[in-house]
Length: 156
Image (cartoon, one colour):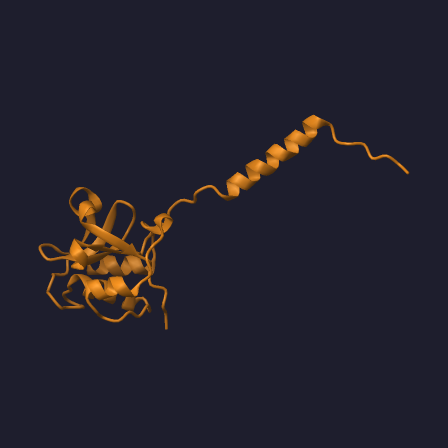
């Protein structure tokens, strides 16, 4: 029987190091998904500046949950038109890693207000004093956050 020579120890260590580096590269955090030129972002931008009207869901005016409903509806994602509180209860909780993912729904003020996450710094919403706008979380809105729910994936 013929003997097979073993790899030198240095070569074996190099192979192990390369395998570990490759494994860690696969698990490295990925950059956040950008809103970019998505249809959802284009829809939100189209409604910027429209006035706030309690109970309205577009096309000329909105309340907060009406704005969320309209943006998703315009993009083929059908949710029941309801209050922020009921919307919060009907959607799955966003995981810690996905909290600030574009398109998730963020809820505030004891579930009396909601908006759509743009990124970790800002969100879109229908604000009673400003209408449809993009607001920064800090400093005003961040302490008022109740929770974030996952982007609704139901499409028909």
